[in-house]
Length: 117
Image (cartoon, rainbow, N blue to C red; front, top):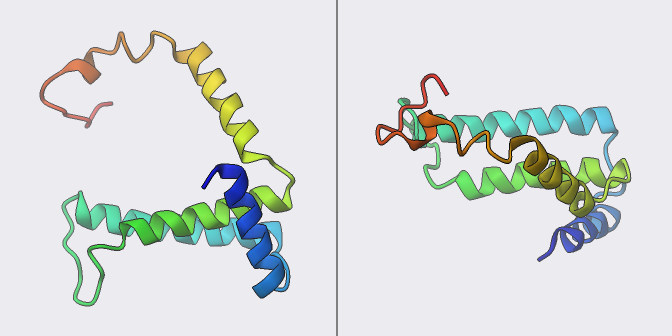
């Protein structure tokens, strides 16, 4: 599925099952909530915390998809073409950071220590 197809699929779903989009501010709050749920899974799976009883250690794909869903909702309701926005972001980062990361000794170290990155 392309990004354009994903934006259309979400829009079709909203208009078929969701009645209408929540307000932009509501969706921003929901996005924040979903990012928090993703952070919880990441902290437990890759960080120092352990999963609580009843938490799903395999929830990473679901939480990533939930973040993407709400992000697409916000893009759709604010008339942002995510394909074009992503292309522009990649071009901007390429111009700005063409050598920055290549010259970062911390990224080339074998230790993988990201404490000071």
